[in-house]
Length: 92
Image 1 (cartoon, rainbow, N blue to C red):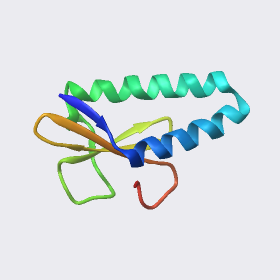
Image 2 (cartoon, rainbow, N blue to C red):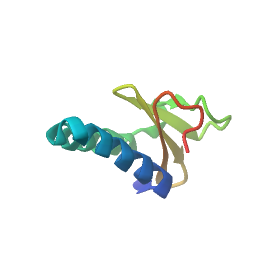
Image 3 (cartoon, one colour):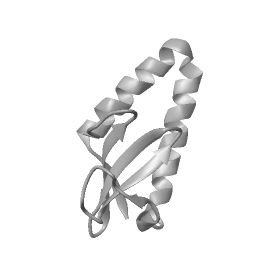
């Protein structure tokens, strides 16, 4: 499977990394590295993650990472990562 990062995910992640880096740039880099590594593991079995609480679609899943919810859609051979939330109503 191929992983595609949508603009909505990238923008929210970059904003969060900027915020984290205000306190500790090295912690922001580690957070980004660990998050991308965790998302890459979804390639093996994306259905292992819970059905999204934000959408009524069995192909949209939530990956929980350090209190953040990463929302992705499973297509035929693609995982589209589009949501990144923490304490927000809408992931996009």
